[in-house]
Image (cartoon, rainbow over all chains, first blue to last red; front, top):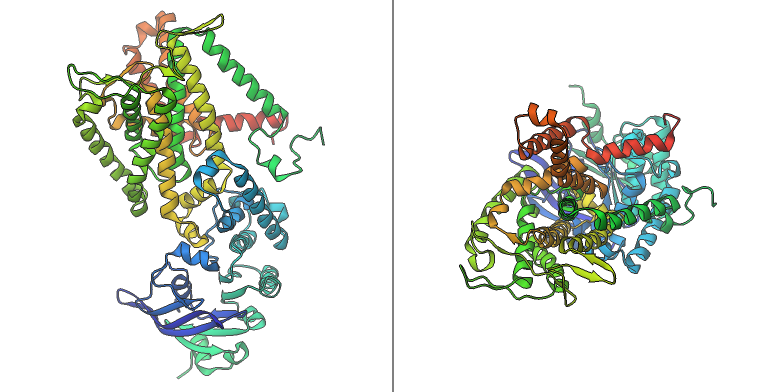
Amino acid sequence: MNSLIKFENVSLNFGGVNALTEVSFEVPDNSLFAIIGPNGAGKTSIFNCVSGIYRPTTGVVKIFDEDISNIKPDAIANLGVSRTFQNIELFENMTTLDNILIGAHRHIDYGSVSGLIFSKKTRREEEKARQIAEDIIDFLEIEEYRYSYILSLPYGIQKRIELGRALAMKPKILLLDEPAAGMNNEETEDIARFILDIHEELEITVVLIDHDMNMVMDIATEVIVMDFGKKLFDGDPKEAAKDSSVIEAYLGVSD
Amino acid sequence: MRRRPDLYISYRDETAILKNNTHRVIALIIASALLILGYVADDYWILLLSASIFLTIATWGLNIVSGMAGQISLAHGFFVAVGTYTAAVVGGFSTEFPNKIIGYELDMIIWLPLAGIVAAGVGLIIAPLAVRLKGLNLALVSIGIVYIGSYILSNLKTVTGGAGLGRKTAGYTILGVNFKDGLEIGSLIFTKNQVLYYIGLLVALLLGIGVKNLLRSKIGRAYAAIRDRDIAAEAIGINLARFKASAFALSSFYAGVAGALMFSTIGAVDVERFGLLFSVTFIAIVVIGGVGTVMGPIFGSIFFGLMPGIIKFVIDHSEFIRDSIPLNAAQIERVIFGLFIVGFLMFEPRGLWGVWFRLRNYFKAWPFSY
């Protein structure tokens, strides 16, 4: 098993709009896979197909060689797929710590009644979850925001906390939807460094959507370029920059 | 370390319910005050206090499903009714006249938990609706449940006695001791209502700890995640169907236990009590008390439970109010209650809990502003 995610001729239609047309690609194990393309190219639709929020109209999406057509989003997440969202989807009325603890949900093992009486097992599992959370807080260097409510934190930190929540799931595949959107150069560099650490130290396969071409070219091991729901290019990031169809999609061509 | 009560050196201390000695002392003072109050207060106030306690338990239940998990339910009163009638059937007497009504005369130790469990079961049956619907749609469907529920209840004449007639509630036997005519322990003599008050306090203590436990556990966090962003919750691996079902079951358990006790002070209950207004009362108490907290329902229920007593006290003692307001006590109560709902939603959406929270923080930081 070399490919963790496999798209086989996936099309996705909303009424008359073709969000994805016959898209096929494979995300190899232990890669840092980037998806780039102009606005509305279908990048986020690919993520939504992977996490089960959208179902492909035709074609098959496989994760770990398993067809996910009939698997619910929460079960897909429990296969080891975690994601962040383009617009931050943190739980704003909770603290950083609680958000990350929610991320660790699938590693905490006790039922509702056990939670009600807070049994010994509950206590032990909660302490284990806290350990997971603290490791991530440490990893992402957000110690000082541990007890801060999300609403009160700056945008860049919120992005980082959302990354932390996704990491708390201890995923095998991490989907990052525009982690550097709206950030200044310094923050982008921070995020790039964290993504590299996640990929190399934690050995998580990362799939990344971004507009920041410099960052993508620097860190990605493989890239696909999307335009109007179609795949234009698949391969080495350095070559993508030279590819004529990619240049056409990004810059347009003169007549 | 000893002088820094807010410095925690273990995760366990940080998530404890009573975090430091101040908390423990306050809890002890409140507990002893409530115990003494039950003995010294006269029967009228005991009734009001008991009503507050039972309302608190029921409202905690609504707070689990609506405040914590965000599933607006207007059917809470129906689950209270299920608890009331389960208790009445299991613990009450059977009669042949004027209607045949069944009752198995079992001990309170059986009918009290059973009322909760049966209500939780009914909650589980209704939970799939919440999986399909959310927000306003769910609220509207839950109104339907109230109507269907009162139809079923008024036609189950062997259980409820039928509309307008009613039936007796569960009997007053606990652990083989009947306290219908009071209870004598050593030199202390307790009336029936005092015993019910103390039983209510004990049950409320246990169930209150339960709510607090939920809030600090993975279950409470999952509920909050579903409430705030259900798509993100699903992407994290939280099974929406399972947790919505557990929220409904737990909420109904609380409702059932409260329902079993709620009418035992009066001794009889009629199906007409369980209309839509009854369910809405709980929503109002949650709003006035404070959504999503443990203390909120306590504040709201005490406010709602004791208000008739306070109004009666004021009317009895002030000729001016008696002469200048052309309303009777029940009408004044309703007006004040309505004003409070509007007022809190506009000025303090966090309810009485929010007021308390601000006061507490003010005095914590006093004399500094923050």
